[in-house]
Length: 391
Image 1 (spheres, rainbow, N blue to C red):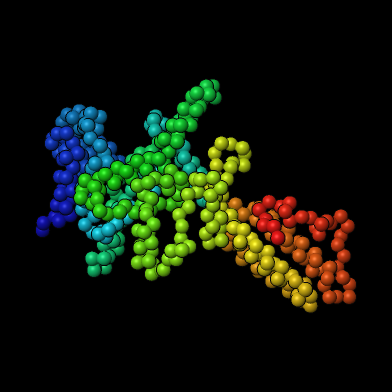
Image 2 (spheres, rainbow, N blue to C red):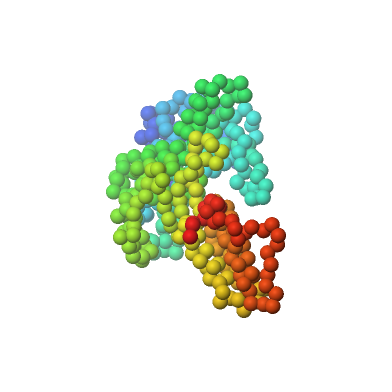
């Protein structure tokens, strides 16, 4: 029986030849790749050569392939991209990006460092010693071919992203400033942008210039470095057509606008939240993306609390009234728990105390409620609390 899988693998490996300056270097790289599949245990270069039966031959040429060959490791993914694109949509290439960590035990690895263990629980952060890589995978929807086959993810980029070493305690201000600039240039988001640009060039050289690259990542990639990159900023018309086509939704063009949060005093209200850049709370030069309840959401909650505690509720038992308020406040707080809702919670608490004091004072009972001495909740001004819209 003809080995179909081996022939398909060798066809991909033969396409590596243009990535090397010499044909013999490409042939040697293919042999080492096959040896890594046959070797047992750790896939070191020496074990790969043993699996190929070359343990008694000279190893110097194999080691020089990694130290002297003028080739880029990312070019080896070009045949994977070209063949995987045949099974994708005619208009888009969906690429998933994420960072991955590989544990190491050697203490003399220059690029290894202590980092957060992704398998550690949320209530305890564990550290691990290892390497960090940036991984891009092409998502191939094989189920569209008609067969009952699940989708596959094919690796198209795998790049090491080491952390920048911090200067010592006796470092000069110039060295500290140089370290800050180096962190901005070699962080994970910046390297992701570089890889996306490189992937765009690889797709163009493969005849895929008409296809849009749709990069998908987690919250770690949702920052200014990636969102402001012009090559991945999708045009409003393209996004609108995809939303209306895929999700079967109709976009209101009159209410749709593009907001640049980088401008002064720019903000975006969406789904009850307000997004804007705020100055650092510790007077540092950097800014942070503030996400909190919008003024309209706060005003609606104020009105709802006022409605639940107005004069028409004078005959409602206090226990039932507290029950309704708790149900309303818990639902509102759960929805607006993302971001920085502390100021909004503080304003809601003040208004709730103000309305409850008024309600208890005018409650229809034989003994009206008396405010404790020293409680000035009725004389406090709502404007004194930050994050609360004035009436």
